[in-house]
Length: 248
Image (cartoon, rainbow, N blue to C red; front, side, top):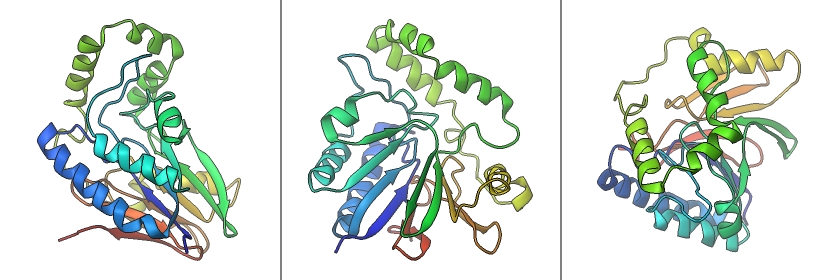
């Protein structure tokens, strides 16, 4: 009987190149096949693609196996949510119209089995990173998106590929945990707890799988990424756990 809720983030399909991304796509589809029979809801929490921009009649090519699998899952009655990340924030209506997937632009608050969840990709939250926070406002501005849409797809997608190549993930810098106080998303979650109780805070973006107790009743989970970790979270109706797929 389907009852589990699954959370995954930061597939970054398209990075660092098509060949490696295809192997990653196959792995992601194998994971989706493995969870399908127990999955009631699936949350893809940002940066599914290393870049995505929808022109009115053109979308980036590639990764059709993942898209086909997601379409089959929604056809089977599984509810799928697609969060906008900092790499694929220019998603519009394609996934909803073609696959029945719900798009989430920012945070999502929900309750399942008596547990309260706060969900967000994680970009632009917490202290620091002021330069990106300014860029995020610019990139999400409808006028900016309209202007970019005037650029022919061949040029626009070429610019985007170049931009993605300069991302944090492309730098190959190893992500490490230093302390809870330096985990900006955990700091942000603790601030929210002062105003409202949440049982679980779930984020992506950090690229490092983490499970941290914020207090005796609240937990911060970062679901990592799929280039190095193949990590995801699953809520079985009672507990939320961090897991790994095909981890050596």
